[in-house]
Image (tube, rainbow, N blue to C red):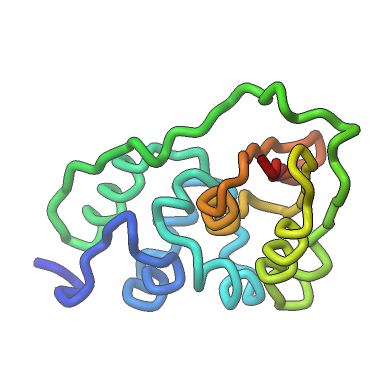
Length: 175
């Protein structure tokens, strides 16, 4: 029996919607990955959780999508489902195009996020101004999966890595 029979947990569900419809499952989500502890931050809940999907959260948490979704579904009393993992694979090798001299703009988005804002509009505007071959870098405390997806769909090459301090550096190359 579903605890919430009107809302099916799927990869496309927004993290914020999941937390709103299934508040009793917040701790199960957080237990899946240490990255999800950040969801307790009210600012991140108002910004990232509103736009990030569970599919994108699985990337940020370095989790298998099937495992994550079906664990949450089980706790919600929903039957398991098979999920296409094609969109969850990420390239672990640093791309040849990532050359430090080609990074023309770096944005440390941590202060923006801490203020409760989201840097997406600014990043979209600034990446549009790049010339072919130029790279934009953004620093965040988590993988900005919705932003990466949006900029990637605009024709940019994308790559992210976590530095020694645990910050995520995402790079966008204009082709």
